[in-house]
Amino acid sequence: MMMLDWTRRAACLDLDPELFFPISMEGPSQSQVEQAKQVCGNCPVRETCLAYALDTRQAYGVWGGTDPAQRRELTQPAGAR
Image 1: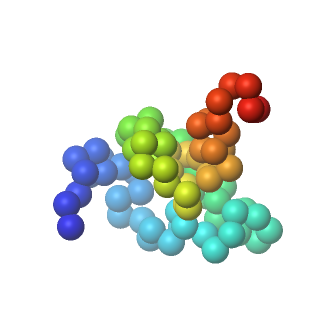
Image 2: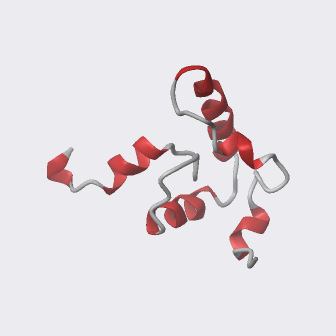
Protein backbone atom coordinates (compact mmCIF):
# COMPACT_ATOMS: atom_id res chain seq x y z
CA MET A 1 0.00 0.00 0.00
CA MET A 2 1.38 3.39 -0.98
CA MET A 3 1.81 5.84 1.87
CA LEU A 4 1.20 9.51 1.14
CA ASP A 5 4.36 11.54 1.88
CA TRP A 6 2.66 13.88 4.33
CA THR A 7 1.42 10.99 6.48
CA ARG A 8 5.02 10.22 7.47
CA ARG A 9 5.08 13.50 9.41
CA ALA A 10 1.64 13.10 10.99
CA ALA A 11 1.30 13.25 14.77
CA CYS A 12 -0.92 10.16 14.61
CA LEU A 13 1.58 8.00 12.71
CA ASP A 14 2.45 5.75 15.65
CA LEU A 15 -0.95 5.85 17.36
CA ASP A 16 -3.72 3.26 17.16
CA PRO A 17 -5.89 4.19 14.13
CA GLU A 18 -8.99 3.14 16.08
CA LEU A 19 -8.64 6.35 18.11
CA PHE A 20 -9.51 8.29 14.95
CA PHE A 21 -12.36 6.01 13.89
CA PRO A 22 -14.71 5.64 16.88
CA ILE A 23 -17.84 3.54 16.65
CA SER A 24 -19.95 6.69 16.94
CA MET A 25 -19.34 10.43 17.00
CA GLU A 26 -21.78 10.86 19.90
CA GLY A 27 -22.35 9.56 23.41
CA PRO A 28 -19.48 7.76 25.13
CA SER A 29 -17.38 7.91 21.95
CA GLN A 30 -17.34 11.70 22.15
CA SER A 31 -14.33 11.59 24.53
CA GLN A 32 -12.47 9.47 21.96
CA VAL A 33 -13.29 12.04 19.26
CA GLU A 34 -11.99 14.84 21.50
CA GLN A 35 -8.77 12.89 22.18
CA ALA A 36 -8.22 12.41 18.46
CA LYS A 37 -8.84 16.11 17.81
CA GLN A 38 -6.25 16.99 20.48
CA VAL A 39 -3.65 14.92 18.65
CA CYS A 40 -4.56 16.72 15.44
CA GLY A 41 -4.23 20.08 17.15
CA ASN A 42 -0.47 19.61 17.47
CA CYS A 43 0.04 17.96 14.10
CA PRO A 44 2.40 19.60 11.57
CA VAL A 45 0.33 18.27 8.64
CA ARG A 46 -3.15 19.00 10.01
CA GLU A 47 -4.13 21.28 7.13
CA THR A 48 -2.87 18.83 4.52
CA CYS A 49 -4.75 16.01 6.23
CA LEU A 50 -7.96 18.04 6.27
CA ALA A 51 -7.53 18.96 2.59
CA TYR A 52 -7.04 15.27 1.76
CA ALA A 53 -10.18 14.34 3.70
CA LEU A 54 -12.22 16.99 1.92
CA ASP A 55 -10.81 16.13 -1.52
CA THR A 56 -11.48 12.42 -1.07
CA ARG A 57 -14.80 12.94 0.75
CA GLN A 58 -13.86 10.96 3.85
CA ALA A 59 -17.21 10.20 5.48
CA TYR A 60 -15.86 8.63 8.67
CA GLY A 61 -13.30 9.37 11.32
CA VAL A 62 -11.36 12.37 12.55
CA TRP A 63 -9.21 13.96 9.86
CA GLY A 64 -7.29 17.21 10.22
CA GLY A 65 -8.95 17.87 13.55
CA THR A 66 -12.49 17.62 12.20
CA ASP A 67 -15.27 15.10 12.55
CA PRO A 68 -17.61 14.11 9.68
CA ALA A 69 -20.26 16.71 10.59
CA GLN A 70 -17.66 19.49 10.59
CA ARG A 71 -16.34 18.39 7.20
CA ARG A 72 -19.87 18.30 5.76
CA GLU A 73 -20.36 21.85 6.98
CA LEU A 74 -17.13 22.93 5.31
CA THR A 75 -18.23 21.52 1.96
CA GLN A 76 -21.78 22.92 1.94
CA PRO A 77 -22.41 25.90 -0.32
CA ALA A 78 -22.55 29.17 1.64
CA GLY A 79 -26.29 29.58 1.03
CA ALA A 80 -27.11 26.12 2.42
CA ARG A 81 -25.68 26.79 5.88
